Length: 204
Figure 1 (tube, helix red, strand yellow):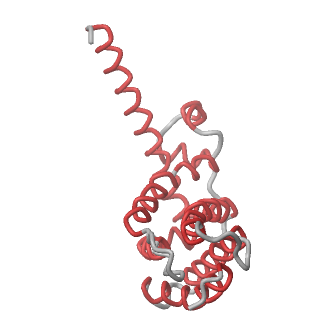
Figure 2 (cartoon, helix red, strand yellow; figure 1 turned 180 degrees about the vertical axis):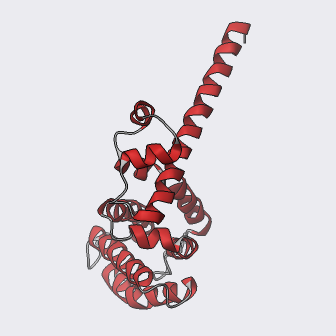
Figure 3 (tube, rainbow, N blue to C red; figure 1 turned 60 degrees about the vertical axis):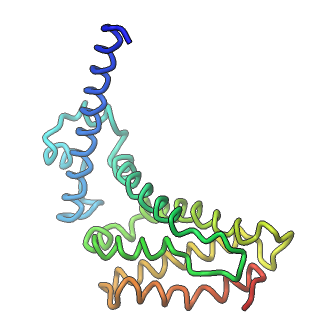
């Protein structure tokens, strides 16, 4: 690599770090404001004031506060996917517990105030539904790869799994977590596993 290319590479690296730092400051500002006054009451100007960043800089990175909010899910998504890869069952035996759910319950317990502030938000609900559906679909596909037809279409089984999970998570958060992550994890599966097993034709 010649000297000119090395200079360009270093300059690009500094710019990338500056971009990451700016975006992180904006995410941290938004999070703190959500905890203080709620998402709906938070304005872009509030975020700018908290992060001490100019309006033009904000709009260089994000279209609006909704896009800023969604950008903060990326790191969490990576953690869930890594957890899922480590715990994914390859067996075609009867349906087993959906391990990523436990990760969600623990994460919600660690960030209870933030989850309680955001769990009813439409953006949050849509994100959770789409992301968890994608992860769950991979599990259902593995369970049905040797089956030509299931009693219930797999997409409907995924919808049932994800919708019931979000409903359980919402209940648990809104009632200030009356039991441990492990306990609500077990309750969720006690309610859903029979239906999922029946839907996939994998009764005990």
